[in-house]
Length: 114
Image (cartoon, rainbow, N blue to C red; front, side):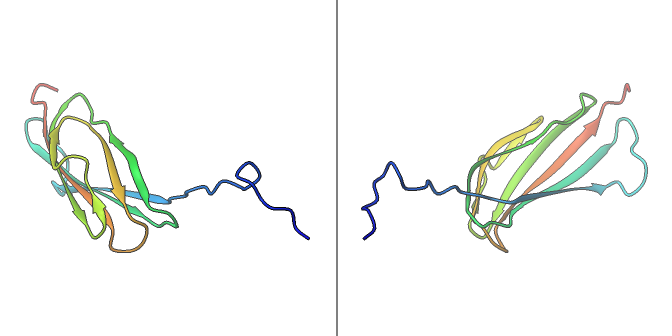
């Protein structure tokens, strides 16, 4: 006969998420020039097996860049904020599985005096 289990002896379930982040410079195609713009796309997905709740997404931009960004969620995902300026430091929710992700579109101006 098995002893009755109690809350003290039950193993605690651990949530695990496997976040992937892909950052791509979307423009310009060639070299970056002071005073001009540079743009990036940052896509964050969750390969699971658990949902990611309040996952911290950060990207610190160089001091020579003045940046604005927007965030768009796809599927069962949610951005912390729809837009912002400066570096990114956001809490997001992304359900596990394909089709659930957040995309940051970042537009920066390079300091003309650098």
